[in-house]
Amino acid sequence: MLSTLWAKLDRRYLTQHYLYFLLRHRFAVCLFIQLGTLLLGYEALHLRVHTDFFNLYPPSHPYIQLYQARSRCAAQRGVLNAFVICR
Image (cartoon, rainbow, N blue to C red):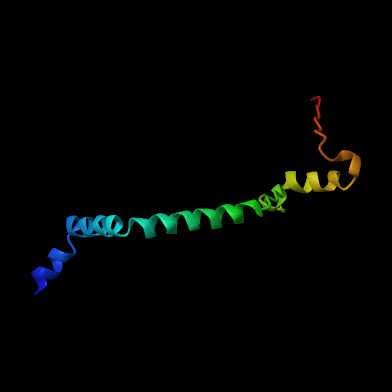
């Protein structure tokens, strides 16, 4: 009994029956794939991409704290500050 179970769980056996299933029910399989594609395409049309990069960075990092302190002023947003220190 155990040997017949292992024979049914053989990879070739399972692959063969899976392919036979796909060939026997090819219309239903194609319809299923098309419906899934249409549903996912419809959902993709309503997808909104909202990127907020500051949620990715740790808020306790000194560079992020400096940026947040500087960006409170609306004129400072998107401005790169470069400092030169003479020693």
